Length: 74
Image 1: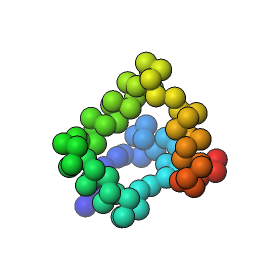
Image 2: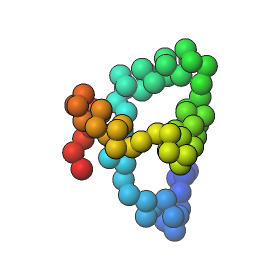
Image 3: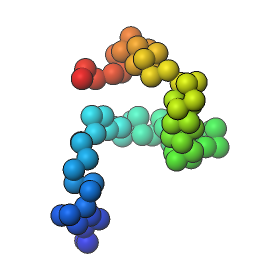
């Protein structure tokens, strides 16, 4: 298999993700996306636009996730 990036790739300097979706969560995401007729890219773009416009408050999202025990400590 051919590597996706080269040793010089800027991706090699990106920080590692804190959270990866486990199989069960990824299955839930796929089901939700299919039901809402959305795609992953569209959801992420919408969230970014909402955050940039001030409609999505990250502190509120973090608080809710922490209350539900879904947010890993930093």
